[in-house]
Length: 454
Image (cartoon, rainbow, N blue to C red):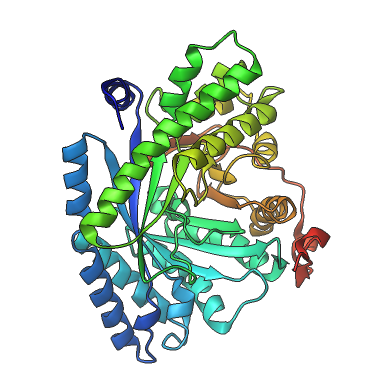
């Protein structure tokens, strides 16, 4: 039973501490839409998504109004389009027509993003995979709400370095295609290692082939709630600190569980997972960096940052799994630079570099996220950054990702404004020593020895 104290506590978290349900994401399988005729395929995709998602936004709005819980986004994820379009799409331009259909559907049903313009190429690329990947720059430049992701490696398969090299080129080309909007297309493109099938957060969401025909996943976020809780235990030892984070994460996850169950019941679609991720926004008081500084760092990036983040990530997961039997996705702490005012301040102060961020990704829940870099960065350098991050995921059996934005026409010392939840970012310097010969070797980096567990 929920008592009046808990009701008041939740209301305070919502009103004063930026607690929100960041997204209700409806996952939809498009496997039954496959057709060898491109027009029929697009029609099938349009019909299925509009049928299943027609009440998604209204249902989210009803729950928000009824329970007083802010639900910031309503989103859709679909089966990786490289799989769906393989039969009908003979060249990259064919895939772009599917991107346009997805964008049209997203606008009609009212969701802010639709994810799944994706390819899974951790061990090799089919012709369809290659065509989809090559279509990404054009697709993201002619759509508003489509998000794209490519999984280039896993602990079980190793790293597909051919795909890594290609993605370095694709990220740069996407930046060029969207340079009039400060290369915003790259903010909708994520390169993964060990991508999960049930992630509700964009830009990396897709509906895995192991999932049901349709599923409701919910992503909850509450950096401000955790920070406020920690202000009450400033002089306490690590045991008290950990218990405080864990208990707070439990409460936040319960809110997500409530919303997920209600959305599932009202839409008649099974509940999948709750993803408790401390996903910051540019709003003051809604920062993961502020939590780390509350733990005892002068600035994020100072010695001790990686240890503090490891502690935070672990306790968030421990609290979350006690609150729901179905915690999944990426659950933990996100460290996107442009979406976190504390991270932006740390970069501006010279406390935080890409190299330190890379070290932090060993223990956070995703990876190098929303980092603006100079527009003249080489494609091979971007591929090297992707390879480094994917290697961390492969060796450590965790999800890692790269979402970097080479801002065409801008360099170190300048700032780029993305707006909304994407925030703004100072352009960070990148190591300019070449890795071209390494990236150009081709082939695969083999899976690590601990992957052979069968």
